[in-house]
Length: 216
Image (cartoon, helix red, strand yellow):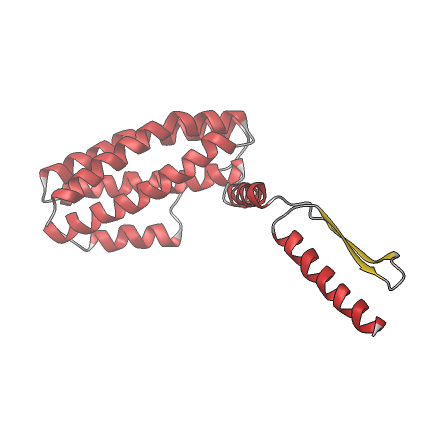
């Protein structure tokens, strides 16, 4: 019979300890049994101690994940400059195509703006790379070259639609990338370049989305 009492008491302790862990509180539970002679003996003591508060824990984890993702998706200054160089050359090449092959007047105008703005940004990037002793690519990589070649084979409304769609996608990526560098770049000069160029990219994205919205 004593063993039954002891086993029941320990089960109760375990249940109370689990409940304390779940609500994130510190709880001490004493389970007592009174013997036939009136003396009380402590059969078990459980201390349920959790170090993580339920409310603050979720926020802390979310912040840690956010910081880890930001760290992983931010290129090194050198890689960023090389990626920006290829992207800038692509924008100029496609802008030249749009200014000549575009059927829509707004598409032509947007293409001319791409040539002017990205040529300027490319020149500033080259000066920055020279200062940092970074060798930039001088030609497009295979994926960007394929995009240019594909659009070269189109004309009229087909060209306009595909070009504008490509520009929306490219500038959404550009804005996200330059925004990260403007906030997290480890090189202050690269950080300043990204911050200076970002408003122009946002202007481009807003303009091209407006054109896209008018297209059938």
